Length: 131
Ligand SMILES: [Zn+2]
Image (cartoon, rainbow, N blue to C red; front, side, top):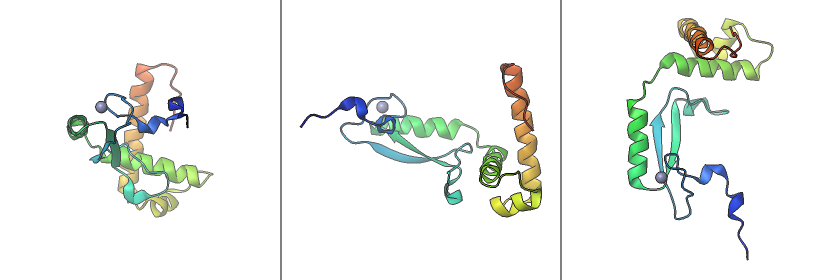
């Protein structure tokens, strides 16, 4: 039987070196405030990383440990998910109910998002203004 290696899904590569994972892989969970799960809020803030070797898994885990964990980034992602599920945009009360965030967390997340959008716009003038 012929195997078509060009059809290996992109997820079957090492997150560090992009080597195809033909001889098994190493999995690890890392803290990542940009990781928002599409359907399971309990998995927010954690990212599954895949590596070809224990050494590459250790490098990936170290990179994520060195990356700042920004609660406002996590909350902004949770707000984005709630808004995507409930068009038109919900009220802040509905947003609080949908995300489990407090009004203060929602306010901080929206401020963080606005600040980030300003930064992105400064870096790339093609970025549309949001929020
Ligand atoms: Zn690798």
